[in-house]
Length: 196
Image 1 (cartoon, rainbow, N blue to C red):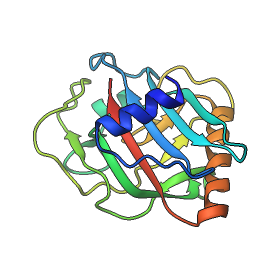
Image 2: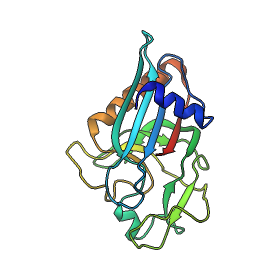
Image 3: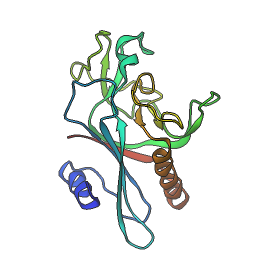
């Protein structure tokens, strides 16, 4: 999708769309296929206006859903693995580190506080997504990050509820624009998740 199409999608859903230079709109578009597990088959994007007034929209392969590890293994939360619900999440992330202190520590968009995300919890370990039932607002550590510097084909354990861009270099483009945004405005980052 292009800039105008993304802006129209925000407007249609009554989500706040930023138009100041480098005030970046971060969004995800979840694939209509809600059956296939463990694939980077969603879209993670950014839309913004640059210093010259150019309207820019970049989209990358990602997952907005947990990988198979979170759907069959022991969940990190007693109620199950978190699956973010579509919606607009105002001021949900700040720039920080994912996997702090571990081998693949890297710059990421990290959850600012508890209670900013809504979603379902999958706890039946049957390897299938559960997009129904009670909506939870207790998620912690729901970050926007990447995988590894080398090619990763399956989501696996890279997402237990996080939004994960498949390609490391593409993720760094998001981070660079987020850093420019923060330099100019000093504000947290909002995120819109759409269901295609």
